[in-house]
Length: 245
Figure 1: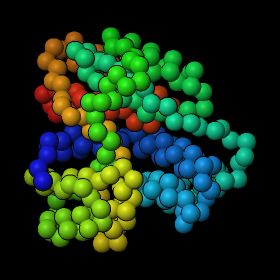
Figure 2: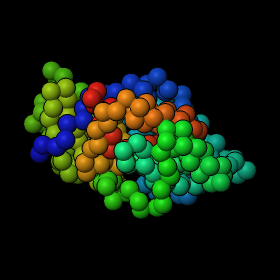
Figure 3: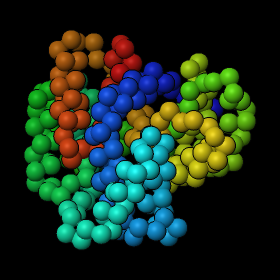
Figure 4: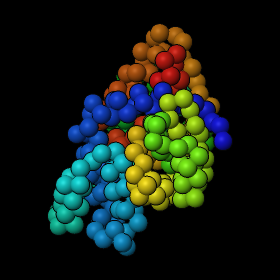
């Protein structure tokens, strides 16, 4: 079940998440708020909320933070109503970029996203302009350890609904259907398998390598600006530079 090796990139992304943990938890808080307002605060009847909580816990969000976010969303009827909006655009040399947001003001958000692309000489595209270059999947990564048996982990995750399992030098990459991520994570939690990352992502079919220093500088400008935007939940792209970023 081999696939494109992106473990180094996943670890790099995880390190960036760790350095911005408070912001990461804020993003999960928004997702929890949306899930509660759409389906209520009972995880036994709200599968969307259950999946968000499972993902938040896998990314080390404390239970107290999760509980506060649920109570706030359930009790504060006057709080902001966030809605999802996805934007597509192009970086240097046609690098494809997808930006997922949760916003209470689409006019502000689209303006900020467009400005982020402009900072790196990129441009915002229309809906569908790059999405066809990606697959929507769930992805879980696990670091290799002496007490983790590869065969047992593969059987556990496949039985729980995983669609692919890749073993790499540094660990394992488990692929699921987007809606199946929660079930696989629950099975891993029950088996006390530590998770490095767990998220629903847009995986590119092919990668674009940038070699021009100016293109690389501009691509980083775009990504940094997007990641600093409070409305942006996730950014996906098909850029692969020499460092695997």
